[in-house]
Length: 251
Image (cartoon, rainbow, N blue to C red; front, side):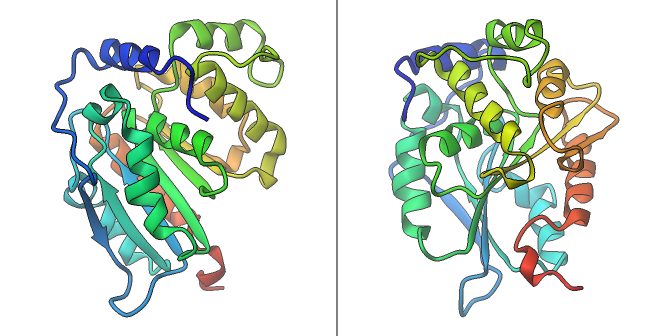
């Protein structure tokens, strides 16, 4: 369910993004589709959420779409124009439900969300709100919450030792509660979570906290910071693992 205090997310993102300018909020939210086949749906749908300052089409421009298509994995791809305006207006999850997930429910064996930076928290919020719809998350240098919750998890000795309060908390507390549940489920977790980041990223403290709670083979790191050249290398590494539509992967 939605956080009882979503305004805190908007404030936190505003500070973290350094006053990022909002774009126009539209209904339905604009998307770009990259079908695997013109005649029928693929086995998996990969939804792509942009980071701050980026818009729909950026994954194609940066080569992510072409690289995934070249692997031969049986996937359709869908970019969503989930810019900061949708977070600020508190309409992101409604638009994800009505315009993205709703039309695709029942069409695919798997639905994954790829989120870079701000898009990472969008991916997590979507999985938290609609857990039955999301089979996997690829979080690339994701925003993971305010210093308060990061310190709380760190001071407890990490995700494994952290005990969330019994009562429902603020949005980032609930995101980390979900991440703890995923961590405890290990290889059987739904959604399956992959984490990728550069070791010089300014959010590395948070990334390392999450990485310690995930299976080691679902964490990828590389040199570099919070930038597309880093993320492009990480994407290539991820595609080598062929995480999507595994049953269709060649033996």
